[in-house]
Image 1 (cartoon, rainbow, N blue to C red):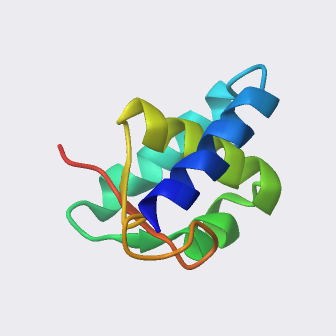
Image 2 (image 1 turned 90 degrees about the vertical axis):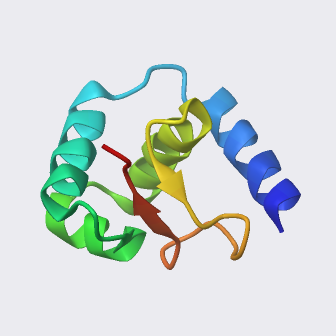
Image 3 (image 1 turned 45 degrees about the horizontal axis):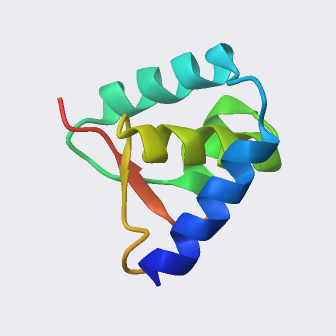
Length: 87
């Protein structure tokens, strides 16, 4: 599971030439407010109003860089993936 998710994240990371700093800021702000709780990506989509594909790309890059933690070793990466930060 983890290997297939990592392949997907790396592919998306290559497609996204510029990391969208506004997305990163909004995502981290919300996750800090929710700390220590985990959030579903679907909840982040609703709260931020960032389009799903863009949010998935931004979060994927953040997961690969270690800024955000996730449960991608247990489930497929998508709207039902849980994400969190470790302050």
